[in-house]
Each structure stands twice: as structure tokens, then as C-alpha cells.
Image (tube, rainbow, N blue to C red):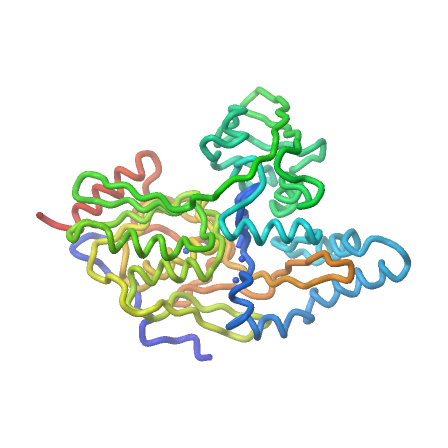
Length: 389
């Protein structure tokens, strides 16, 4: 594939203003990594699936097979092989963990209601707490540091492993079981024991603001969220602009992010990705609303599929991006089943925006920097783009 597309437009000034397939740091005890979702493995990722044995996938599978042959744990051997590989986003799940993980992408999960991310220094920071969840009831707040889970230290560990600890195995840790968290807030350190619950992601929220402005907030891209975004755009008042709030969105299903992009684009390129060196493309469906003013709101918690969507609407001149630089996770993971039924998810490639920008390790730079009061700033900018009513 050439990597070029007739819809691959350079960024440009919009309307007189000067003017981001499963991904992760992941919704902790919740829903999302940066891998290709199950549905995608039946289409474009067929090529990726055939490439799974290559590279360190083969090394991890071999380590698991050798361990099983001598009566040792294939899963533990695979974890060591992943650690040696240097794959930042690589992870190994038990069969039960992976089944629960996939269920979470359907909008349901067993957990405690925390979102978190790994900081540059390896510490795990809580980025969001679901209202009414066990974590919220315990008084845990965004900005708290998660230092341990059931006595196991979290610093320096991949967030995917933290997810596994928080959620537990589908068989051994259903709703109602407990998990003990070590937390830190400033100079205070304490322990909370939470009871896991069956939670719904409710990932899309829509509200009307003054202006007229419609704010569509997407917390994570679970099954159906893309269609929810499209319906919210269709239901918005005819002259209303849209603030697409992707702050803290940890990613999710790439197919859903592409569907969401289709709400604002009339077909064309959303992103390219490579799998073991072979390029593929993701395209929006035709018929999106290309005239309604649009601002995408992002921050350092905007990751993976959310960065893919942001890069698409920015590169194609469809939206002004407001906020702070996004996280920078633009890698593609693919699953590989191990001999004992556990699953290794390993990085096989990377995404690029329509203009060819790499996201991984770099993030998306907003057109307009805003931190405090970013939502109000976005609404003000959007009213300016819409012009006089």
C-alpha cells in the first residue's frame, strides 16, 4: 500500500481561527488496551493474524512450550519472555482474565471503577474514578497514586498487569470478591479494601451547553460507542457546534474510533498501520457531517484509539484540537494463544495519522494549548468558529 490517500489532506487554518486493533494505559479494572479487537480479526487483521508467529511472538510461544514440556508454568515463562523482549505494551493474560477483558470491551466489566496510567517515572496514577463505583465510595480520587494491589507493588509494572491484579481471574475473582489497594495522596499513605462489582462502562455522555454547543464526552471506545457518537451528532440542533471531549480516554476498540470519525468525515483515510512491516489503512464511512463546527478536546490521558481519532480530524482540517499534548500510544497489539490457554498480547506494528505522523512516544500536539478551564476554552473557541447566529 502506498500510504497515500486522496483524502490525506495537510493541516490547514479553519474558519478564520488560527488556528488520536484493542489499545492501553487502559481503563484499570475496566476496559481497554491497544490491541486489535475480536471483530477486526475477521477482516483487515487477517494479515496481522497470519503474522503472529513472527518476531518475539515466536520467542514467547517457544518459551511457553518449553516450560510446559518440563512441567513448569507456560504463563510464567511467557511473562519472562515478554519482559526480556522490551515490549512496553506486551502482556500475558490467563484464559479467564482474557475472557473478562474481551467482555469489558462489550461495555460490561467486573472491577472497582478506576482509570489509571503509568507515569514516566513508573508510578501508577489514578486518572478517573467512576461515580457510584467501589473506588468512588472509598473516597479514591484522580491524582492518587496506586502503590500496591493485594500486597504486590505496582511501580514500574505495565498497566496491563495492574489491570489483571485489580480484576483478578474470571473464575476466582467474580463480583463480590475483595481486592486490597495501597494508595498515596501527597504525604498520606493508606490501604483500602474494595469489593469488586459488575459495572457498565457508559462510555458516551452528551449534554447541551450555551451557544448553541453540544458536548460529546467519550470515556473509552467500547462496543457501540461509535454509533452513539454518530447518533449524538445527528440529534444535535442544526446550528450547534460540537465539542468532542476525549480527555482521559484510554482508547479501546479501534473500529469504534473509526465509526466515531465517520460522524465528522465524508469517507477517506482515518489512519494507516503496519503489521510486521506491511501497511494497511483504516477508512471512515461516507456521509458524515463535514460542515458542523468541531473542537476536539484532549489531554495527557488521551491515548491509543482516541489519539487515532484526534489525529484524523486534525490532519484532515476537520477540527481544531484544544488542550494539552496526548499520551503517545500508537502501537498495535495482537493476541497469540499459548499452550495452556493463556494469551500473550504483543506489539506487531504502529499507527500513523493521515498525514503520516507517528503517534507512539510523541502524542498529538493540540492547535491551541489549554490546561485549566480547557472545556470552557473549547466552548468559547467553538462559538467563534460557528460565527454569529
